[in-house]
Amino acid sequence: MSEIGLTSKMFVKDVMSSPVVTLDEFVTSNKVAKIMAKNALGCVIVTNKIGKPVGIITERDLVQRVLAKNLVPDAVEAKSIMTSPLVTISPESTVTEAAKQMNSLNIRRLGVIYKGSLNGIVTSKDVLGVMPELIEIIQEKTLIDCSTEIDQNTDIPSASMSGYCDNCDIYSENLKLINGENVCDDCRTDLEE
Image 1 (tube, rainbow, N blue to C red):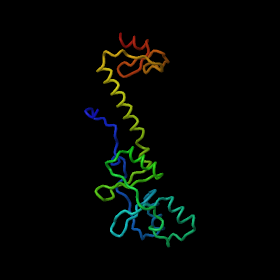
Image 2: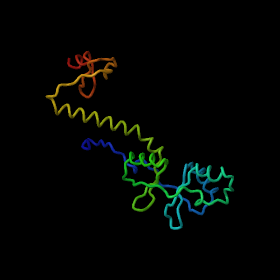
Image 3: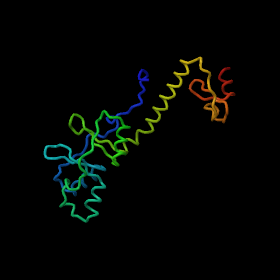
Image 4: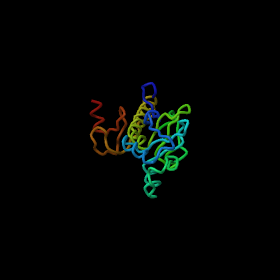
């Protein structure tokens, strides 16, 4: 399959957002909110004095840890409302691995770390955005694999099945796979002529 340029894997580096907006851990929550609003962001990464990512602040963190508690935004530092530690993933990991990690930890964002440095961020929205493409790739791979197997095994009789004909969209109890399509007896006769 790789010889025709089709791969069934998509990597985090292909869908992540980069660069990431980072803020110092001593910045006030008011400034965090302003930067998120100005840049239309759902989150920012919090870094320590040496620039190492130590946590994340999301819109939800601001609502639950500042607004819901009726705290003064100018008096609350990022380090006190961030979610820490920052959960990370490698850019070489697959999108499927990222989705599984987010699901198992019940989170929607992962920091992408490459060689010890923050390289980007991948969100559940990024993953959902590529799922239709991944499904199409898997369908193409299956179709190619099935066609190749049938071509290589000419001594195996073609099994019939029921369903809708790919050519005329009419239901048939006797569909056969021809050139990668399930066709009924009538369409099969038309194709042979």
